[in-house]
Image 1 (cartoon, rainbow, N blue to C red):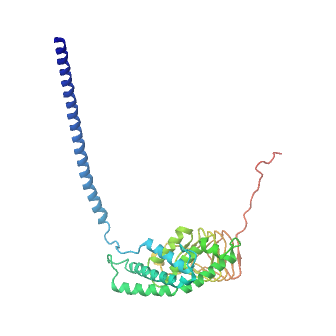
Image 2: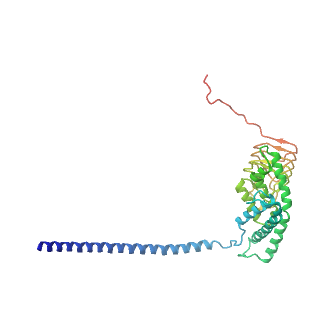
Amino acid sequence: MLHAAHRAAIAGKRAGAEARRYENILSVCLIITTVFLEDIIMQQDNNHENLESLVRAVVGGYSGQPSYLPNKDAIIEILGIIRKLLFPGYFENQSTELTDLYFYVGSLMMELGNRLEKEICRALQHDTSVTGTCDEDAALISARIAYDFLNRIPALREILLTDVEATLDGDPAARSTHEIIFSYPGILAISIYRVAHELHLLGVPLIPRIMTEHAHSITGIDIHPGAEIGHHFFIDHGTGVVIGETTQIGNGVKIYQGVTLGALSTKGGQSLQGKKRHPTLEDDVTVYSSTSILGGQTVIGRGAVIGSNAFITKSVAAETRVSIKIPDLDYKALHAKEQ
């Protein structure tokens, strides 16, 4: 019995010691956790204070920034509506029967007018302190401009069909006008340019450039909305084409990839604004790939043909062919036998 009691006493002491050790470990853990949490809370407080300071610094730098601007995504959506009106049947999500065409076109015109009016109003006030509203004068002007633009859609469609025709005539790889309208980057860029150009002529700021730079980002074709371009215009391939603001292009002109119609120098910066800085191409001119034609006084005469890789800063007479000399090429067999 004594042995049993002794063993029980020893076991009890061990259990008590184990319990006390566990309590000590738990106490240490609680202390560590408390310190850790307090440190996190202090860091969060510091971060919160730092964030507040950072926000104040960022917002402080917004002084004088415009607060009522056009919505770029809305403008791109507007282009989608316009393309449906210019090329009916190509870009709809579902087919439209002829019997529904008047209702369909009417609904598109109403949507276009309303959305365009809103974005034009924002553009007209982009340099003002207006916040979130369209004032009465700007609303009246934007409504008139939107209406005037809607009236230009039939003429826009007419000239774009000549561009499609010129593309079909100029590209033996084209199988149909459908293929051209659906897939050719040149027609997409020209279509958007022609829309933007009309808005430019109507005095709309910002929006025309947003439109043409959207086309630039998709196609690699950069046409300034201020350029003047005649009917039956054909851009083949198109990647890398640049057409500057004061460029004048006649009817029936064809240009190929990599062509630049640019300024001789832009050192004058804003002092050159409004001056003729880019070349003039008269009717039926052809400019082949990777050619640069520069300068506001440079005129390429009617029917001239400019070969690839030329660099032109002087006028070219009508019915003239310009080409650079073929460089000397040295041909050697890769595995020629030694003599």
